[in-house]
Image (cartoon, rainbow, N blue to C red):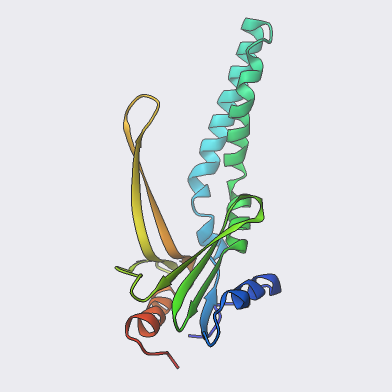
Length: 192
């Protein structure tokens, strides 16, 4: 296992370097693989096309029936539909700004948020808890450090749930990275 899955762009490499504490040694860095990171778009794009199409039909009908008074109410729905249609673009952009790093002390995840900000999460060996691996046939996948489900209700009162996973997601050689994390943080030894 090399130190890098692939070289990080200079501006991302400097973020990693700035985050390291004194005498903290970098073991591995990576980023999400674009093809794995954009997989949710397989569902989002067709749904967005249908959603935006329905909104256009609604606007036309509302324009005819209400002399244009209710037609603008459909514009937010068109915006949502277009946002879903262009999900491969924003998922790929998000993947390019996400960084994963493993040091001799912790696993670090930089998750981009809106307006150029990012959330940095650090996982020490004791904070990793139960690691799970989701591996695909090509060896890529997710190394999950934490997983939680939030519950709510939709507009009709039905229960809904959403599972959020955090860790090194959509990476190449997920099994090799898991072994590296276990050797580095869970057994107390630094890999060679």
